[in-house]
Structures are given as structure tokens and as C-alpha cells.
Image (cartoon, rainbow, N blue to C red):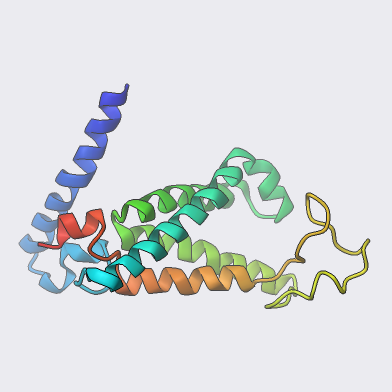
Length: 189
């Protein structure tokens, strides 16, 4: 079973970009080069900027793994709690989980960031529809029985976190994964 996974990853990492490159070159859209699978810019900075992009990419990817896994595991309960169709939550949860994994690897980075960005924009929309504030009220000033999180007192809901994820995802999409990524290894040449 593990050999099938390794073979599938090898095909995805080496064959797929070459097929996409061949298709794009054959239709003569050089401005749409295969590096667009990686970032909006065709640069893979190294040194301190590359390390900063690595830190940002791995941190955001890890956070989306942590956010995506419980949503996949408890999909129906999550869909009911935000009053959203299960199929949309399914797409969002797997986008977070898979996109987080791809962000950590720095593989197909632009394709990993855009669906997660769409999911975060939808989260902002849901918060706005419900009238939630951008920054939550200080939880220590709220009466004790007014808001309790799943484990007791917690931060009240706001759309600040989804907004910050959007900013980070846009930065990754624009500046790319950096030199310390699979994208740089595949598309950097």
C-alpha cells in the first residue's frame, strides 16, 4: 500500500508539472508558465527572505492542518453549527487539510492557497451576515453566562482571525513559497 502512495506522489511531483508545462508551451501562452502553479511571481528568494517565507508557509500550513482535521472528523456537526450545507463544509474542510499539507511542503503553493483563501473569505462573509464584530469584545468584560466556548470561557466570535489568514495567504500567493520548497525545486529552473 505504501508503494502506491509513493508512486502517486512521484507522479504528482514530477510528471504532472511536466505535462502542464508541455501543454502551456504547445498552446504558446508563455506568460501563463507552469510557475503559476507555485506563485504569482516567478521568483524563489533564498537567504533571510526565503527563510521568512518558509516560516510563514509552514506556520500557516500547520495551522490549517490543525483547523482542517477536526472539521473533517466532525463534518456533520460542524456543518450544523454554522448552518451551511454539508457538501460546502466537506470542500472547505478538505481544502484546509490538503492545502495545509501542500503549504508545508511548498508544493503547488498557489493552487493550495487559493481554495483556502476562498474558504476564509466565506468565513468572513458568514461572520458579517451574523453581525459579528471584526475584533471581539474583551472576554473578561463579558458577563460570565453570556458567552462560553466549548471548554468554558473563551474568546467570543469575531472575523479577525479569518481576515488575518486571508492576509497571510495573499502574501504567500504573491511572494511564493521561497527557495526552500518543492516548487522551487520543480519550477525554479
